Length: 103
Image (tube, rainbow, N blue to C red; front, side):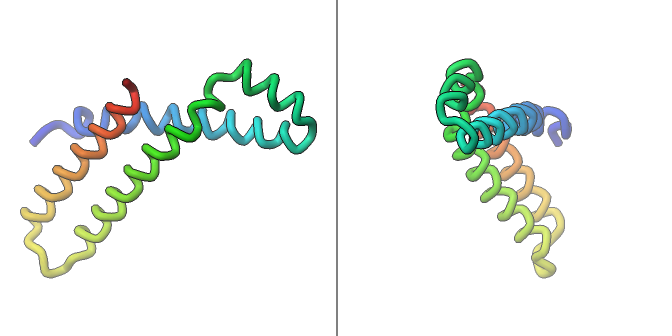
């Protein structure tokens, strides 16, 4: 089996970046409520705000795959070895999505 680290490396980086992007976006939205001009200045100075839409789309794709993993895990009738193989394949897909985000 591939090591846990190699199958999760890009996802880990993606989630770290996503937290930073979401924080910047929340700050932007807050500033927008107070003063739209201030928010626009912040958006120009903070490039993470502009990455929010793309990052959120990738996050939604990964979330859908995570939901599939949960379905597999809860399937009491499925053989554990088959479950593991299916989950590993999904984790690889998630990692590829996160890797593609980095490009």
